[in-house]
Image 1 (cartoon, rainbow, N blue to C red):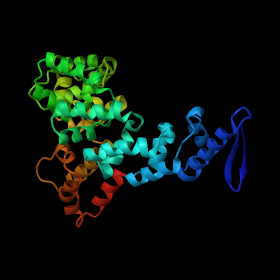
Image 2 (tube, rainbow, N blue to C red):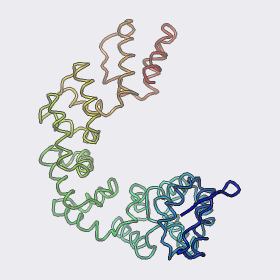
Image 3 (cartoon, one colour):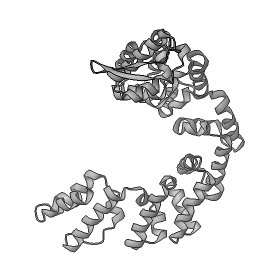
Image 4 (spheres, rainbow, N blue to C red):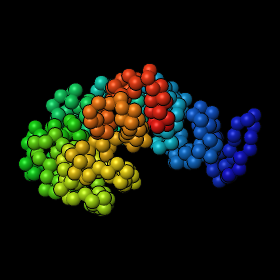
Length: 363
Protein backbone atom coordinates (compact mmCIF):
# COMPACT_ATOMS: atom_id res chain seq x y z
CA UNK A 1 0.00 0.00 0.00
CA UNK A 2 1.29 3.44 -0.94
CA UNK A 3 0.37 6.86 0.34
CA UNK A 4 0.65 10.39 -0.90
CA UNK A 5 -0.70 13.78 0.16
CA UNK A 6 -3.14 15.94 -1.75
CA UNK A 7 -4.40 19.31 -0.45
CA UNK A 8 -3.31 18.36 3.05
CA UNK A 9 -5.48 15.23 3.14
CA UNK A 10 -4.23 11.69 3.14
CA UNK A 11 -5.08 9.46 0.19
CA UNK A 12 -4.47 5.77 -0.06
CA UNK A 13 -3.82 3.63 -3.14
CA UNK A 14 -4.41 -0.08 -2.73
CA UNK A 15 -2.82 -2.87 -4.68
CA UNK A 16 -4.35 -3.47 -8.06
CA UNK A 17 -5.69 -6.84 -6.91
CA UNK A 18 -8.21 -4.96 -4.75
CA UNK A 19 -11.42 -4.05 -6.62
CA UNK A 20 -11.44 -0.37 -7.52
CA UNK A 21 -14.89 0.25 -6.04
CA UNK A 22 -13.89 -1.24 -2.69
CA UNK A 23 -10.64 0.72 -2.73
CA UNK A 24 -12.54 3.95 -3.29
CA UNK A 25 -14.99 3.26 -0.47
CA UNK A 26 -12.15 2.32 1.88
CA UNK A 27 -10.34 5.56 1.07
CA UNK A 28 -13.49 7.55 1.79
CA UNK A 29 -13.90 5.78 5.13
CA UNK A 30 -10.28 6.46 6.08
CA UNK A 31 -10.69 10.13 5.16
CA UNK A 32 -13.86 10.34 7.23
CA UNK A 33 -12.17 8.90 10.31
CA UNK A 34 -9.22 11.27 9.95
CA UNK A 35 -11.16 14.43 9.18
CA UNK A 36 -14.33 13.92 11.24
CA UNK A 37 -13.26 11.83 14.22
CA UNK A 38 -9.65 12.81 14.79
CA UNK A 39 -8.02 9.49 13.93
CA UNK A 40 -4.39 9.54 12.90
CA UNK A 41 -3.76 8.17 9.41
CA UNK A 42 -2.31 4.98 10.85
CA UNK A 43 -5.22 4.51 13.27
CA UNK A 44 -7.74 5.06 10.49
CA UNK A 45 -6.14 2.53 8.16
CA UNK A 46 -5.85 -0.03 10.95
CA UNK A 47 -9.47 0.40 12.05
CA UNK A 48 -10.92 0.38 8.53
CA UNK A 49 -8.99 -2.79 7.75
CA UNK A 50 -11.00 -4.59 10.45
CA UNK A 51 -14.16 -4.13 8.41
CA UNK A 52 -14.35 -7.03 5.99
CA UNK A 53 -14.07 -6.07 2.33
CA UNK A 54 -17.09 -8.03 1.23
CA UNK A 55 -19.36 -6.18 3.62
CA UNK A 56 -18.09 -2.67 2.93
CA UNK A 57 -20.95 -1.90 0.58
CA UNK A 58 -23.62 0.23 2.19
CA UNK A 59 -22.09 2.26 4.95
CA UNK A 60 -23.23 5.67 6.18
CA UNK A 61 -20.47 7.20 8.27
CA UNK A 62 -21.94 10.70 8.28
CA UNK A 63 -25.34 9.38 9.39
CA UNK A 64 -23.59 7.33 12.06
CA UNK A 65 -21.80 10.42 13.36
CA UNK A 66 -25.02 12.42 13.33
CA UNK A 67 -26.88 9.72 15.28
CA UNK A 68 -24.27 9.44 18.00
CA UNK A 69 -23.95 13.21 18.37
CA UNK A 70 -27.73 13.52 18.76
CA UNK A 71 -27.62 10.85 21.47
CA UNK A 72 -25.03 12.96 23.29
CA UNK A 73 -21.66 11.37 22.55
CA UNK A 74 -18.77 13.69 21.79
CA UNK A 75 -16.31 12.94 19.00
CA UNK A 76 -13.72 11.49 21.34
CA UNK A 77 -16.28 9.04 22.69
CA UNK A 78 -17.45 8.16 19.18
CA UNK A 79 -13.85 7.53 18.14
CA UNK A 80 -13.38 5.15 21.06
CA UNK A 81 -16.64 3.39 20.25
CA UNK A 82 -15.93 2.77 16.56
CA UNK A 83 -12.32 1.83 17.32
CA UNK A 84 -13.50 -1.05 19.48
CA UNK A 85 -16.48 -1.90 17.24
CA UNK A 86 -15.60 -0.86 13.65
CA UNK A 87 -18.44 -3.02 12.34
CA UNK A 88 -20.73 -0.15 13.34
CA UNK A 89 -19.63 1.53 10.11
CA UNK A 90 -21.46 -1.08 8.06
CA UNK A 91 -24.65 -1.10 10.13
CA UNK A 92 -27.74 0.58 8.74
CA UNK A 93 -28.40 3.61 10.90
CA UNK A 94 -32.17 3.58 10.34
CA UNK A 95 -32.80 -0.17 10.26
CA UNK A 96 -30.28 -1.39 12.82
CA UNK A 97 -28.87 1.24 15.17
CA UNK A 98 -31.82 3.55 15.77
CA UNK A 99 -34.17 0.72 16.85
CA UNK A 100 -31.58 -0.50 19.38
CA UNK A 101 -31.14 2.96 20.86
CA UNK A 102 -34.92 3.38 20.89
CA UNK A 103 -35.20 0.20 22.98
CA UNK A 104 -32.99 1.85 25.61
CA UNK A 105 -34.93 5.10 25.45
CA UNK A 106 -38.18 3.20 25.96
CA UNK A 107 -36.56 1.64 29.01
CA UNK A 108 -36.05 5.14 30.38
CA UNK A 109 -32.41 5.78 29.55
CA UNK A 110 -31.60 9.24 28.26
CA UNK A 111 -28.95 11.92 28.53
CA UNK A 112 -25.82 10.94 30.42
CA UNK A 113 -27.32 7.56 31.39
CA UNK A 114 -27.71 6.66 27.73
CA UNK A 115 -24.23 7.91 26.84
CA UNK A 116 -22.68 5.95 29.71
CA UNK A 117 -24.53 2.81 28.71
CA UNK A 118 -23.39 3.00 25.08
CA UNK A 119 -19.80 3.63 26.17
CA UNK A 120 -19.75 0.63 28.51
CA UNK A 121 -21.65 -1.90 26.45
CA UNK A 122 -21.24 -3.54 23.06
CA UNK A 123 -25.00 -4.01 22.76
CA UNK A 124 -25.06 -2.07 19.46
CA UNK A 125 -23.29 -5.00 17.84
CA UNK A 126 -25.88 -7.48 19.18
CA UNK A 127 -29.08 -8.52 17.47
CA UNK A 128 -32.18 -6.55 18.45
CA UNK A 129 -34.55 -9.51 18.12
CA UNK A 130 -32.07 -12.29 18.93
CA UNK A 131 -30.40 -10.79 22.01
CA UNK A 132 -31.52 -7.34 23.20
CA UNK A 133 -35.31 -7.72 23.31
CA UNK A 134 -35.22 -11.33 24.60
CA UNK A 135 -32.91 -10.16 27.39
CA UNK A 136 -35.22 -7.30 28.32
CA UNK A 137 -38.17 -9.72 28.40
CA UNK A 138 -36.19 -12.14 30.56
CA UNK A 139 -35.23 -9.38 33.00
CA UNK A 140 -38.83 -8.20 33.22
CA UNK A 141 -39.92 -11.76 34.04
CA UNK A 142 -37.19 -12.08 36.66
CA UNK A 143 -37.51 -8.67 38.32
CA UNK A 144 -41.19 -7.99 37.83
CA UNK A 145 -41.19 -4.30 36.96
CA UNK A 146 -40.05 -2.00 34.19
CA UNK A 147 -38.32 0.33 36.67
CA UNK A 148 -36.34 -2.52 38.24
CA UNK A 149 -35.11 -3.61 34.82
CA UNK A 150 -34.01 -0.05 34.03
CA UNK A 151 -32.09 0.26 37.31
CA UNK A 152 -30.35 -3.07 36.86
CA UNK A 153 -29.42 -2.40 33.24
CA UNK A 154 -27.92 0.97 34.20
CA UNK A 155 -25.85 -0.72 36.89
CA UNK A 156 -24.59 -3.44 34.55
CA UNK A 157 -24.78 -2.59 30.81
CA UNK A 158 -23.36 -6.01 29.87
CA UNK A 159 -26.73 -7.56 30.69
CA UNK A 160 -28.03 -6.72 27.23
CA UNK A 161 -25.04 -8.27 25.48
CA UNK A 162 -25.16 -11.74 27.02
CA UNK A 163 -27.38 -14.77 26.51
CA UNK A 164 -29.04 -14.19 29.87
CA UNK A 165 -31.11 -17.38 30.20
CA UNK A 166 -27.99 -19.42 29.50
CA UNK A 167 -25.67 -17.36 31.74
CA UNK A 168 -27.92 -16.45 34.66
CA UNK A 169 -30.08 -19.55 35.15
CA UNK A 170 -27.21 -21.74 36.47
CA UNK A 171 -26.30 -19.06 39.02
CA UNK A 172 -29.89 -18.70 40.19
CA UNK A 173 -30.11 -22.47 40.67
CA UNK A 174 -26.80 -22.39 42.54
CA UNK A 175 -27.97 -19.68 44.92
CA UNK A 176 -31.24 -21.50 45.53
CA UNK A 177 -29.34 -24.69 46.36
CA UNK A 178 -27.18 -22.69 48.78
CA UNK A 179 -30.27 -21.57 50.67
CA UNK A 180 -30.95 -18.16 49.16
CA UNK A 181 -34.64 -17.30 48.89
CA UNK A 182 -36.24 -15.77 45.81
CA UNK A 183 -36.32 -12.44 47.63
CA UNK A 184 -32.59 -12.77 48.40
CA UNK A 185 -31.83 -13.47 44.75
CA UNK A 186 -33.88 -10.50 43.58
CA UNK A 187 -32.01 -8.31 46.06
CA UNK A 188 -28.67 -9.64 44.84
CA UNK A 189 -29.63 -9.00 41.25
CA UNK A 190 -30.85 -5.47 41.91
CA UNK A 191 -27.83 -4.46 44.00
CA UNK A 192 -25.08 -6.54 42.43
CA UNK A 193 -26.21 -7.68 38.95
CA UNK A 194 -22.69 -8.64 37.95
CA UNK A 195 -22.91 -11.55 40.43
CA UNK A 196 -25.23 -13.43 38.16
CA UNK A 197 -22.97 -12.96 35.15
CA UNK A 198 -20.15 -14.78 36.91
CA UNK A 199 -18.91 -18.26 36.20
CA UNK A 200 -21.04 -20.50 38.50
CA UNK A 201 -17.90 -22.13 39.91
CA UNK A 202 -16.49 -18.72 40.83
CA UNK A 203 -19.75 -17.70 42.48
CA UNK A 204 -19.93 -20.93 44.49
CA UNK A 205 -16.32 -20.45 45.60
CA UNK A 206 -17.00 -16.83 46.63
CA UNK A 207 -20.06 -17.78 48.69
CA UNK A 208 -18.07 -20.52 50.42
CA UNK A 209 -15.18 -18.15 51.21
CA UNK A 210 -17.45 -15.39 52.52
CA UNK A 211 -19.31 -17.82 54.77
CA UNK A 212 -16.71 -20.36 55.88
CA UNK A 213 -13.32 -18.65 55.61
CA UNK A 214 -14.01 -15.01 56.47
CA UNK A 215 -17.11 -15.82 58.54
CA UNK A 216 -19.17 -12.91 57.25
CA UNK A 217 -22.66 -13.34 58.76
CA UNK A 218 -25.40 -13.97 56.19
CA UNK A 219 -27.53 -11.26 57.79
CA UNK A 220 -24.72 -8.69 57.51
CA UNK A 221 -25.00 -6.13 54.74
CA UNK A 222 -21.34 -6.91 54.03
CA UNK A 223 -22.13 -10.49 53.02
CA UNK A 224 -23.17 -9.54 49.49
CA UNK A 225 -20.31 -7.06 49.24
CA UNK A 226 -17.97 -9.84 50.28
CA UNK A 227 -19.24 -12.12 47.52
CA UNK A 228 -18.90 -9.29 45.01
CA UNK A 229 -15.23 -8.87 45.95
CA UNK A 230 -14.36 -12.54 46.27
CA UNK A 231 -15.91 -13.55 42.97
CA UNK A 232 -13.36 -11.31 41.22
CA UNK A 233 -10.35 -12.75 43.06
CA UNK A 234 -9.03 -16.17 42.14
CA UNK A 235 -7.33 -18.22 44.85
CA UNK A 236 -3.83 -17.09 43.88
CA UNK A 237 -4.71 -13.38 44.07
CA UNK A 238 -6.46 -13.84 47.39
CA UNK A 239 -3.51 -15.80 48.76
CA UNK A 240 -1.01 -13.13 47.69
CA UNK A 241 -2.98 -10.34 49.30
CA UNK A 242 -3.44 -12.31 52.50
CA UNK A 243 0.27 -13.07 52.63
CA UNK A 244 1.11 -9.35 52.39
CA UNK A 245 -0.99 -8.68 55.50
CA UNK A 246 0.68 -11.58 57.30
CA UNK A 247 4.12 -10.23 56.40
CA UNK A 248 3.22 -7.13 58.45
CA UNK A 249 2.26 -9.25 61.43
CA UNK A 250 -1.45 -9.62 60.81
CA UNK A 251 -3.10 -12.76 62.14
CA UNK A 252 -5.79 -14.64 60.24
CA UNK A 253 -8.22 -13.28 62.81
CA UNK A 254 -7.15 -9.71 61.96
CA UNK A 255 -7.65 -10.36 58.24
CA UNK A 256 -11.10 -11.86 58.84
CA UNK A 257 -12.10 -8.88 61.00
CA UNK A 258 -11.06 -6.49 58.24
CA UNK A 259 -12.93 -8.42 55.54
CA UNK A 260 -16.09 -8.70 57.65
CA UNK A 261 -16.10 -4.94 58.15
CA UNK A 262 -14.98 -3.84 54.68
CA UNK A 263 -14.38 -6.56 52.05
CA UNK A 264 -13.27 -3.97 49.51
CA UNK A 265 -9.90 -3.76 51.28
CA UNK A 266 -9.03 -6.87 49.26
CA UNK A 267 -9.58 -5.05 45.97
CA UNK A 268 -6.58 -2.74 46.45
CA UNK A 269 -3.52 -3.58 44.39
CA UNK A 270 -0.73 -5.48 46.09
CA UNK A 271 1.53 -2.41 45.89
CA UNK A 272 -1.17 -0.21 47.43
CA UNK A 273 -1.60 -2.66 50.31
CA UNK A 274 2.15 -2.75 51.00
CA UNK A 275 2.59 1.03 50.86
CA UNK A 276 -0.45 1.64 53.07
CA UNK A 277 0.59 -0.89 55.70
CA UNK A 278 4.14 0.45 55.70
CA UNK A 279 2.86 3.97 56.40
CA UNK A 280 0.42 3.08 59.16
CA UNK A 281 2.42 0.34 60.85
CA UNK A 282 6.07 1.19 60.26
CA UNK A 283 5.87 4.99 60.28
CA UNK A 284 2.93 5.65 62.60
CA UNK A 285 3.24 2.53 64.73
CA UNK A 286 -0.37 1.35 64.46
CA UNK A 287 -1.22 -2.21 65.53
CA UNK A 288 -2.81 -4.66 63.12
CA UNK A 289 -5.84 -5.10 65.40
CA UNK A 290 -6.45 -1.34 65.36
CA UNK A 291 -6.37 -1.17 61.56
CA UNK A 292 -8.46 -4.33 61.18
CA UNK A 293 -11.23 -2.75 63.23
CA UNK A 294 -11.01 0.51 61.24
CA UNK A 295 -10.43 -0.81 57.70
CA UNK A 296 -11.61 2.35 55.96
CA UNK A 297 -8.20 3.81 56.82
CA UNK A 298 -6.68 1.31 54.40
CA UNK A 299 -8.89 2.43 51.52
CA UNK A 300 -8.45 6.18 51.78
CA UNK A 301 -5.93 7.78 49.44
CA UNK A 302 -2.64 8.20 51.28
CA UNK A 303 -1.43 11.05 49.09
CA UNK A 304 -4.65 13.04 48.82
CA UNK A 305 -6.28 12.37 52.16
CA UNK A 306 -4.45 10.53 54.93
CA UNK A 307 -0.96 12.04 54.78
CA UNK A 308 -2.06 15.70 54.29
CA UNK A 309 -4.51 15.43 57.17
CA UNK A 310 -1.90 13.77 59.33
CA UNK A 311 0.38 16.77 58.68
CA UNK A 312 -2.36 19.17 59.80
CA UNK A 313 -3.07 17.06 62.87
CA UNK A 314 0.60 17.15 63.88
CA UNK A 315 0.80 20.89 63.20
CA UNK A 316 -2.24 21.68 65.36
CA UNK A 317 -0.99 19.48 68.20
CA UNK A 318 2.51 20.97 68.10
CA UNK A 319 1.03 24.48 68.29
CA UNK A 320 -1.38 23.47 71.05
CA UNK A 321 -4.52 24.35 69.13
CA UNK A 322 -6.21 21.07 70.01
CA UNK A 323 -7.61 20.13 73.38
CA UNK A 324 -7.84 16.50 74.33
CA UNK A 325 -7.05 13.52 72.15
CA UNK A 326 -7.86 13.49 68.46
CA UNK A 327 -7.08 10.45 66.32
CA UNK A 328 -6.05 10.37 62.70
CA UNK A 329 -8.98 8.03 62.09
CA UNK A 330 -11.44 10.69 63.29
CA UNK A 331 -9.81 13.28 61.06
CA UNK A 332 -9.46 11.00 58.03
CA UNK A 333 -13.08 9.93 57.89
CA UNK A 334 -14.38 13.52 57.67
CA UNK A 335 -15.60 14.78 54.33
CA UNK A 336 -13.30 17.30 52.68
CA UNK A 337 -15.63 20.20 53.44
CA UNK A 338 -16.08 19.19 57.07
CA UNK A 339 -12.34 18.75 57.50
CA UNK A 340 -11.61 22.23 56.16
CA UNK A 341 -14.37 23.81 58.26
CA UNK A 342 -13.28 22.09 61.46
CA UNK A 343 -9.51 21.71 61.29
CA UNK A 344 -8.12 24.25 58.82
CA UNK A 345 -10.18 27.41 58.35
CA UNK A 346 -10.79 28.18 62.08
CA UNK A 347 -7.02 28.42 62.64
CA UNK A 348 -6.16 30.31 59.47
CA UNK A 349 -6.40 33.77 61.06
CA UNK A 350 -3.90 32.97 63.83
CA UNK A 351 -1.73 30.66 61.76
CA UNK A 352 -2.06 31.51 58.03
CA UNK A 353 0.44 28.82 57.15
CA UNK A 354 -1.95 26.04 58.18
CA UNK A 355 -3.93 26.38 54.94
CA UNK A 356 -0.80 26.57 52.81
CA UNK A 357 0.60 23.54 54.61
CA UNK A 358 -2.51 21.53 53.80
CA UNK A 359 -2.62 22.57 50.15
CA UNK A 360 1.08 21.83 49.74
CA UNK A 361 0.72 18.42 51.39
CA UNK A 362 -2.16 17.54 49.07
CA UNK A 363 -0.22 18.51 45.96
